[in-house]
Every structure is written in structure tokens, then in C-alpha cells.
Image (cartoon, rainbow, N blue to C red):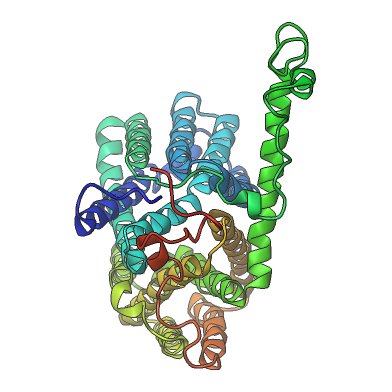
Length: 470
């Protein structure tokens, strides 16, 4: 049976949204962001060595993305939201205490794993907790606000990094970054979670066989001489092995269930592909915005201001998600095409004034990005919500790497403006696909299971269930 909140639903929703925004803000309030390349250079790393570290970081995220989503569906998602920033904090501490190539590499691995643990678990927890409160349709708005707080925190950390480093040195910058991660872990522990970890996997097509009954000779044989499933007098080894095998089987079951839902449910598949298509291009292009600004002929002192203009547009896009979440596919496609054309026109102008168009385009990309994620969450109904979200994350990472490669190849033949304009062309193709979709398909953001959860019906994330344990 459902566990109802002791506070009024509206107040509970606002409190949840505040906690989600706090978590997102603390996660990105990292003073090391603008300075870690300088830290590496101070300790003698070459550009090639730095590039190898960045590659290791990306590779770690790619390898751990889907397994972390499966784990989030098997265990407490809140637990992963606590562990993620703790691992990142450990990596930053290694950088400060043992500055060397090996420590930097270990730190990037920990950072990559920590980020992957958060990916999928954060979105799944947010959607299901809002749905439990009967506010599943507020997911897009909540994620938009959380994204805005994340960007504000990044800007604040960037502004604070230089004076902190100037007054107290790089160790203080690292210490402040570790402190922010620790506070983020505390904020993760304060998030509510009312699901039963691993619930629903028994119906996902691959659950482990039941353990032997607690009475009778079968149980005694399973327990072994140690009396607890152990190997000999010490016991415990057999039990541990059986538990690990059972967990492995459940993990395979959740992964198969998530993959089957993507393959067998057109709505989920289309939403996942939309997330990948929308996020990958602008998620890579944002790394080159300073270079585009410099290519306009703007003085060095004006480049940060042009970058700030673009990120002001991104923040505004995150805050405007609410009104946009009910747009139909054709309207969303039209908006996406307008954003692509604004970006291309601004980039091709070749003057600082063109950055108004780039900022408008990035506003649209961020807005559609959050709406696409919300529609993916609304489409999922099986037990593998975090797994499916991580599959989308894996697609985004792979596609983003492809955009990086394309930018590197094109930039050797053309200036940054034409390269920007060419790389936003895929958005016109996505807009065309959205425009030819049947009317009413994939339109209003109304989560399919949110109302049932709020009304005390079956939990969409737990097939066959009647609610979440409190």
C-alpha cells in the first residue's frame, strides 16, 4: 500500500524540488573546474598526458554508464546519489595530497565512476518521487530548475576559483571542491525514496531461482558444515557466493528488461533516440564556444562576456521548460529548427553581435533537451527506469565523441563559424522527423503511470506492485 506524506502534497513537492536543485547545485560547485588543467601543468604534465587523462575520464564514464543504471534499479537510488559525490571527493583529495600522473589518473577514474552512479539514478528517483506525490507532470519543470541551479553553481565556482587560488593557493581550491562534494553527498542522503530496491525484477524475464527453504535436509545441505552456507567451520563463503550469483542474475534480468522495453515499445525507443539526438550536438559544441567567440575578433577581455551571454541563454532555457513541456512533436520540431537556424546565423555572422543568435539557439537546445528527457521518463513503465536512462546516457556519450571527432576534422578545413553552422544541420533533420510524426503522438507531457501511483494504483516502475514501501 502507498505511504502518504505527512505534509500537504504541494508542500512536499516544493520541498522535493528544492532538494533536487540543492543536490544539482552542490554537485557542480567545484572550484577545480576551471583550474585543474593548470594544476596538471604545474606538476609537469605535457599536453599529450593531459589528453590521455581526459580520454581515460570519458572511457570510464562510457564503461560504467549502463552497469551503474542497472545497479540503480537493483539497490537504493539514493545510496548511489550519496556514493557518487563521495567517489568524486576522493579523487579530488588524491589530486591535492599526491599530485602525480598516477593520482590524476585515479582521480579521473573515480570522478567518471561517481558521475556514472549519479546518471540515471537521479532522474529515476526524481520522476518516481514526484509521481508518488501526484506531481509527475512537474518533472520537466523540476529538472529545468535543477539544471539552472547547476549552471549558476558552475558560474559561481568559476568566479570564486581565481580569488581563492590567489589568496590560499591550489590546495585551498581542492579543499573547497572536496567540501562541495561532501555536502552534495549529504544532500543526496536527504532525498526521499519510497521504492523497494530491486522490486519488479521477478517479473522481468530472468530472475534468479528461489533460495532453498529454511527447513528440511535441503536447507541443511545448502548451509554446509558451517551452518550458514559456509565452507567449513568459518561459514559465510557459500552464502556470499550464492548472494553474488543471485545479484548477478537480477542485474542481467533488469538489463534485459530495460533493453526489451526499448526494443518493444516504440514510444520509449523514440523518446530515447530524441534524447540522444538533441543532447549530443550542443553538448559537444559548448566546449568550443570560447573558440568561436575568439574567432569573431572580440578582444580577449570580451570573450568571457560572450561565453556568459550563451550560458545565460542556456539557463533561461532551463527555466522556460514548464511552458514548453506540452508542445506537440511538430511544434517542438519547429522550435528546434528555429534554434538551429539562429545558431548557424549567429556563428556565420562572424561578429560578436552574432552571439545573440548563438545564445538564442542554445536556449532552445537546453529547453528541448530537458523536455526530451521528461518524455523519456514518462514513457518508461517497467522496472528498469534507471537502466533505460543510462542507455540514453551511453548513446549521448558515444554520439558526443562522434561530434568531437567531426569538429576536429572540419576545423582543419574551415573556421569555427562554418563548422558550428554545419554541425547544427542534424537538428534540422530531427525537426523534420518530428514534423512528420502523426498528430497527437508524443505530444503532451502526461506521464502514463503518474496518476495511477498518486491514486494508489499499480506503481509503473514495479510491474504487478501496488505501491512502494515507505
